[in-house]
Amino acid sequence: MGFTATPAQAAIDPATPNAVACYLYVDKAIGYYNVRTATNPTAQLIVKYTGTRLPVWSACGEIVGTTYRCTSTSPQDNSWVAVNYNGRQGYVAAGCAGGLGA
Image (cartoon, rainbow, N blue to C red):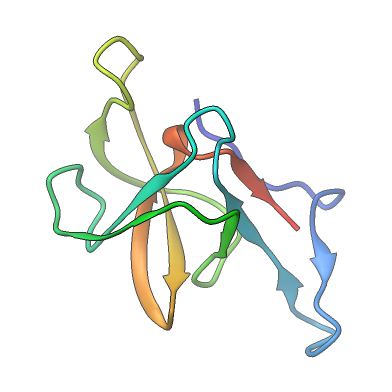
């Protein structure tokens, strides 16, 4: 259920020409995602993020963490994305987000 940005989705950040700007978008159908302190659905909640997107922490991709479900009827997943929320590293369940991209 996870996703990974492809070169076509990535854009060069003009401030640092060798860096790629990558963001995790909010799923429009859900309207938010939870940013947590660890890759665990029971980890402390940093924020219920209702904006459009957050920058990824470092690499544009996913990491493996604890298994979760976005809803009680959705399939299980264990892919997480590290994001930068106001300078603080947090983690979002990848399957509950809208996708990675520029």
